[in-house]
Image (cartoon, rainbow, N blue to C red; front, side, top):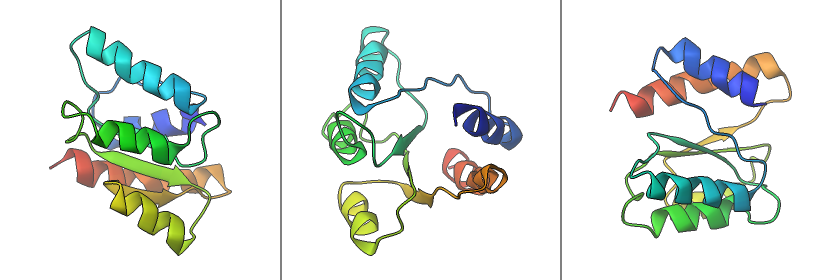
Length: 119
């Protein structure tokens, strides 16, 4: 899946360095790595249904850290349940993108990324 995300970012025309995590613990470790390097991500694409630590919990950690509060977070998930959308909106998600079953349709993420990064 990270190939499709990389392609969507490439087609947006923004320079990027992609770091992928396979679970919520790894996502939090990546954030701590950025802390150690005194850097911060420009954008976080976060799956809601991560193993170990859920995407909602990772989002809470991001929004609870003053250093990361302004980083745009796009929640990507296969769920379109209103409860899920509401829960991540309350936790401070910047956008919500329902992952399609067709990988080509995943490139519909491009306008979401363009809008957020152009701000």
